Length: 162
Image: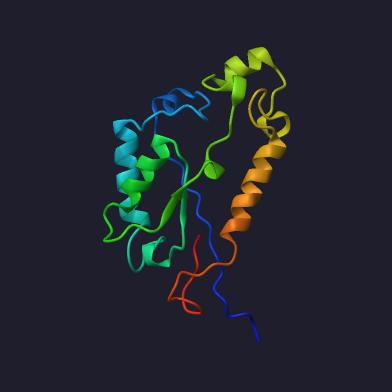
């Protein structure tokens, strides 16, 4: 007999537009707010992605939302869930922050290539920031925490979501 347990799902939602994302600057630890366009995009996506019933993300099926401490991530979370009766449980944690670009924070890719013509973030990481191994370990830890969870009251019935 096939395993009837619900398949846990993990959604990764990137924040809306910021001034630095418009011009291609690498943004990790710098706390930059959403632009008006970024707020509008997140609010529009909320109507498509989040809600009871048929939408992709039904808040009652969510165990926990992990939110980066950056204001752009917090604002995106609230724009996504403010239109539902009850926002899901959420925690603010550095574990889901963006890559720490270290010395490359705020630079354009072309500026980084001037410093290091062969730079590849997936091989080299970022001097003064996170290595590729550091980032992979952080992501692996988040995935492990998401694990096979099911929201209270839905055991054996719905899809768990972390």
